[in-house]
Length: 124
Image (cartoon, rainbow, N blue to C red; front, side, top):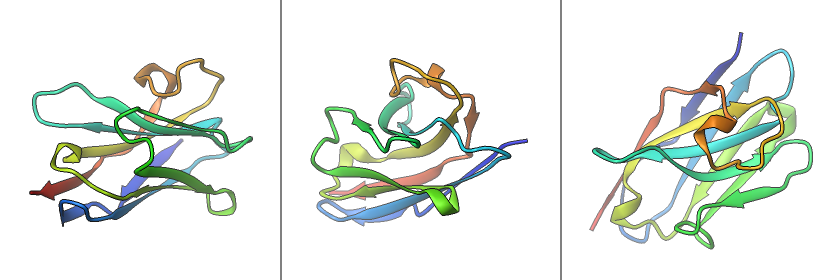
């Protein structure tokens, strides 16, 4: 059984920072971990992803240079450092675990286990 749990959301003003954490409890390390977000009335979109074995990272164009995904392999934890936040970054943020190679790590179908989400609100 796999359990994915996010934490660290909150409310900040434009230009502020937040750090999200995601722990993945499982019998084996995930092949990849991803962060997604979903704003009201919009589809869930991939924000950042990391291949746990290599540390390779991938970002959506909208967050490049502002967000950083990282991992603590010993703790099976993935982080999303978000700097320079904008109101359009406001959304529910979800963490997900993937278990096999995928050519599209910012796509939802690369992941099979999801957390419950943590809310991020950025005020102008």
